Structures are given as C-alpha cells and as structure tokens.
Image 1: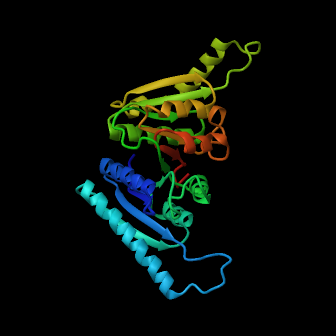
Image 2: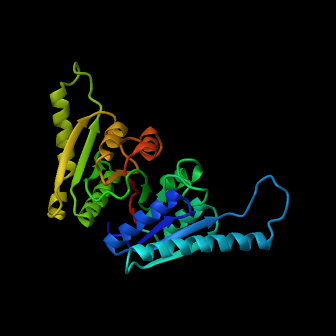
Image 3: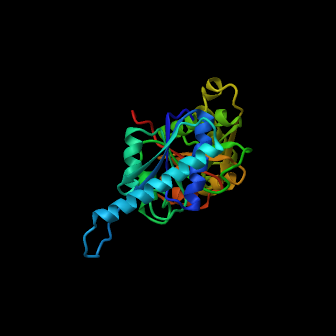
Length: 284
C-alpha cells in the first residue's frame, strides 16, 4: 500500500515486537516512514496517593528505552528505512487514534500485549482502535513472515469494500503476489431461489465490484471466488494460506457488521495471518 507514514504500537512484548517487524517490512516495501510509539499512562485508579514527578520520569525513561530498542532493531534488520520512536504520556488507544487522525496512513497493532498500545483483543484498546480509527488498521497475528500466498480481500459491493480492494491491490503489487477477491453468501432456501441461480447472481455482483481493477493493476493477477458460507469461516479458512486478509470496516451481505459483530471478533481472534481493516480514507 502506498503509505506515507506507518505507525506501530509497541510495549516491549513479543507480540508487539512481531508487529514492529511486520510494520518495518511494510515500510521497506513501500518506502513509507515508520514511527514506533509507546503510550504510557501513570495512574492507578482506586489507590490514594499522588503520582509524583519521579514516577512520571521513570515511566518516561522506560518508554524512551523501549522505543529506542525497537528503532535499533529495525535499523539492524533494514538498511535505509526512515524510522523514529516516540514515547507518549497518554492512554494507548488515544495515542494511536490521534496519530491516525493527524499523521498516519496505516496503524499497526499486535494481537497481544503487556498493556500499552498493543494490548489487542484482551482489553479496550483493540476495540477502540479498530472501531474508531479513520485510517487503515493492520492487526498482526498468525504467520506474519510469509513471503508466499495471496492477498485475500472480502468483497460485498459496499463503499468500504472498495477501499479494501484498493488496499488489497496495492499490497499485492508491493509484494509481487496475486489478489483473491472473495464474495461469501448464505444461500437462500432452494425452494425460494435455485442454488445455481443464487450463485450466478452472487458471481455477477462480484464481477461488477471488480470492474476496472484489472485495468488499474494489469501486473497483478486476480482470482474471483464466490463461495457459500459464513463470512468469518470463509475468511479464516483462506487465512491459512494467505499473506494478508483485507476487509472493509463496514459492509452488507456476507461481511455485515465486520467490526461491530461476530465476524470482526472472529477474524481478530482466529485469523492465521495479519488482517488489514480497510477504513475509508480520511477525506471520505
């Protein structure tokens, strides 16, 4: 994807380190600047004593040390990346969301964390970032270093699916791999609509959604897949052999309520590769 700045949350955990490595690889592929962020919040609710300047300074030193180590790791692994680190005294979700609004064209978070900006899935940070960000969010999980396999994108004809298609083609072009565009649907009863007719209608809808994308990215191979089944199960199954799964932040049909319902939750918990949530552009 053609990002100008990738921002990745980091708290020193193994999962956050994996997210940094993935973000660095993405920056190397795209030429984007990379910012590594540690958010720290010096407060203990329910405990009645003052947060002293010494405690704040200690937290700041720890945060600065963490991001310095992460920056050094990136520079050791990639020569020439424009990378810097920032320690911010603010809650993790707020830090990432603010940067998403002001500077980042891609936010990256790990699937677990020690509490800071990469505490995804186990607390509120993941929900806040994934739901409220106004820039794409990559959730790094599963096999994160795959150099083979396609970029899989869920398509349902919604506006956010268009954003997902754009990001999927950009990602595939940068990786030198193919796009697999998937439309999942739950078949109506055969007594209402014959199975063949339902599948033909879904395939026509998918092909309509793909109009123009082949011409825009002639160097990227495209496979169009229509399959009967629940969206989460279909995408999770395909994630086993994919480099990346891209999904819109809102949708209808097979990908309804990605972030607000069970589909998004299942992808973030069970996908076997990184998941890119394609929020609409900031100007939208």
